[in-house]
Image 1 (cartoon, helix red, strand yellow):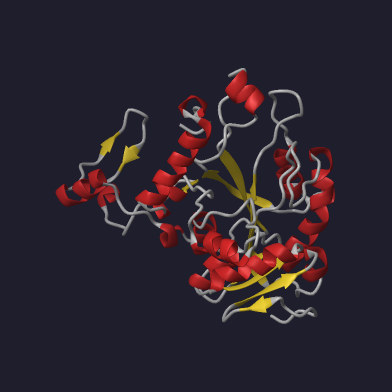
Image 2: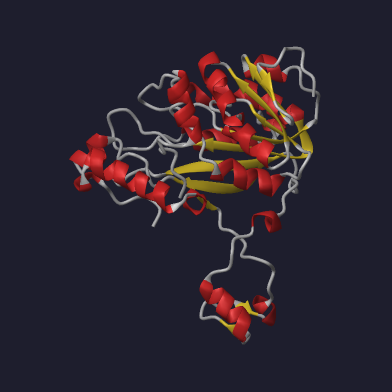
Length: 329
């Protein structure tokens, strides 16, 4: 796909562009994108270096982007937004901005909305999130650690392209044993009638809607995430979490090492590999086009390239887009 802007860099399957995504998206033809997978800046109380919009202005700010999203997505396309929650300043009470956002996006057009459908909520559990806000979690002990981001999966039609056979999980040992020994149909105490088909081998288990990135982490990475919390915050600060898992804190991955070697400051809020991998596999096929309009360190583009999808990445900060090129070495 050729835009009226020169790309900052290209790969075999994709292109990264420096600039405001509103201006860049204006060059994308109608109904040409299969998947938008992104993590826009959150409406956090504490401001981040990459920019944040206040919660009370967030829906209005996002509206201009959403209009383009709806225009450029194919009728079978999906919009997947990773967006963390926030707290009201000075109180142990949650903001409703991310719920207000999805309601606005899914409201009918005749009622002032965009007309998206909420296909499903996904959840990213990050076991390495810090125990914040400290006032309510580690000092007064009135709340548990906020360790989950809501990932809204929106679509232009009730039946977007998706196939959970592409994201099957390996069967558990107990399920493997059941398949080997056979299954006796029965009615569970809940009233569900489990037929003989339950014992069919479908090649793997249908995944739940919680994305647990530890499945993509080796034991050393899991240990590092745990050690990071224990060393930096002490055992007393490791709190219960609000889900009873993908870390993005690894300090020794290739991107981090190369940023250090080249003198770049890594993007502070990076996608874990597991999240775009799950979404891209689930909602697209090889050759489809994936867009990330808030690319940051461009993990979405890197995963798309690996999975043989074409991709576009837009980023407004030159330092971040310059360092993101290191992912493709």
